[in-house]
Length: 276
Image 1 (spheres, rainbow, N blue to C red):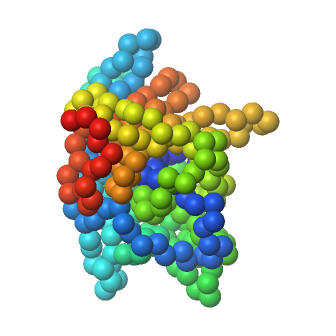
Image 2 (cartoon, rainbow, N blue to C red; image 1 turned 60 degrees about the horizontal axis):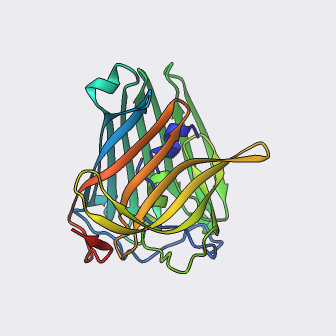
């Protein structure tokens, strides 16, 4: 998984955190308490270029009920695009799609990405025969070559979108500062172990709306030899919605930030708002 894929988690990465006690079973249903069909989250992106913060683009996350193979399911669609100004340096048009059951079991994932003029596709289709997680994966590289593989695991496996949807229903209030959460993630080419670190509770005021939220803060980290590097830090509202309101993304070519500017169709009362 490349860094831009992880950021697109996490391109709006997590609305909560996976419990360290997640059941060791391939199909892991979860009661959805955080969001509903019709929720729409909009973000403004910024990038630090030579010590100057510039408008980098927008991102929109929309979730709706759909009919999929005769069953009512949830489809979450994330569109990220850079501004005309940033397109001169590095253009990005990412479209991510996730289909999950009503109890948040992954069924399908696709990412179509135009990044720096190069087009890639990552795809995962899930099924659950005999209590295992069966994944048919496809990756299309910028040259148009496709590679396919089939993998199976006895434990739960998520892609970046389905994991984000599932995690939003977990209660993170019992986490201790420094606690680590481990999970497996599929990206269309492989399955990789990932981890989050809980940083504690902080207040955050959004740039766009000037609303102050009480947030849980998590960091998405990866191993680099014997050292550990922080890839993204995200701020999640400390209420039943677990809305991601801020993301700090540490790229190879600079630092980017995303701030939530609007939320429509939110399921629960926003009790994490301190000042409005």
